[in-house]
Length: 334
Image: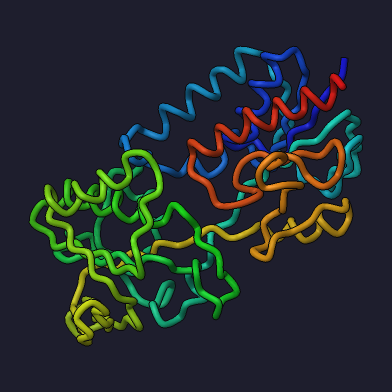
């Protein structure tokens, strides 16, 4: 029986394996961590429905185990071709096709030193906020409740200075979702979103944006924060410009949340060099064709699923997994 190896056990990899199984094709998931789920494990609720991420993840894990799909945990891939995957420990795994579902990396907010992440208390990333929400404890560094919270969009996205010119696509809606969660936790808090422009591309996203303004009184300020610094009373002062009015703005806040973007994995460069794959200018792996072959690589027998090829939402990642499985089945049955 022909077999496909899926590199990566996140949502894209799991969906690919499940769809391959339904078409009678065996697969092996090679996962570098000790459990399935990828970055979804750290997410709290999903936009725009506020569905608990744990519900989606647990259902997919249940299906994987129920169907008996083979998984190799704690396995680091060193290299691969369309017919074999070589692991860092020296093992070689034979196969008939490979699906690359290794996802993305988060931008390191410490690079943007002007915002003080890792330097000042009460500067967090959107990933930190998801973790705190999952833990059920969102507070300032001293354990007290924030009264004024500012979200900053496009940290590590659309920024040529840090070689991240692409849009990360989901940061805007993440900022809206997290701002609403903050208002639900702290009804009396003032919550601000500082943005360049708001990109609400998905079903229900624009409606959520309107709800954030009309129902929750979340403030949206068009303008970038230029810097943040501590004050003598333990708060943060931010400097920005409201580009709609053309006026400079200074504000004292209790918490600054940096909406960090998606960046391409460092492994993409190595994989491209050794397998003949191609990278887009953003560093993500480029498909053979953006329209008719968007889950196929330029190399026959190697396919892509999920955010390894571009920033995507969870729904898009799941659809990508299904599309990749169909492409693999067509390739193997040709």
